[in-house]
Image (cartoon, rainbow, N blue to C red; front, top):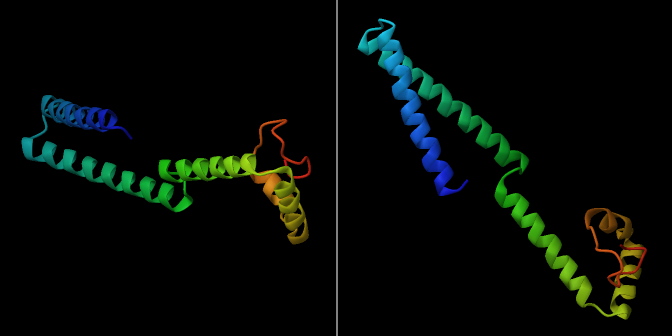
Length: 121
C-alpha cells in the first residue's frame, strides 16, 4: 500500500467515525453511548483487518511474495539466456536425469524462440 492510500484510508476512517458519531447523536443517543458504539465498531474493524492481514501473510499473497517470485523468475530467465547452447544442453540433461525438466518447464514461462531447448521451454 502506498503512503497516499494509507493517508486516504486514515482520513476516510476519521471522517466516517465522526459522521457515524454525529448520526447517532442526531438520532438521540447519549454522548457516552455513541462513543461506546464507535469504540466497539473500531475494535471490530481492527480485529477484522488483523485477521485478514494474518491470512494473507500465511498464504503468501502479500506484495513482497509476488515481487520476490517475479524477481526469481526473471533471474532464471536471464541466466538461461546467457548460457551457451552447450551449457543449456548439459542443464537439460541434468534436469532430465533428475526428473525435473517437466517441473521447470511448468514453473517458468519462456519467450518463444529465445534459444532455449524445446524440451525445457
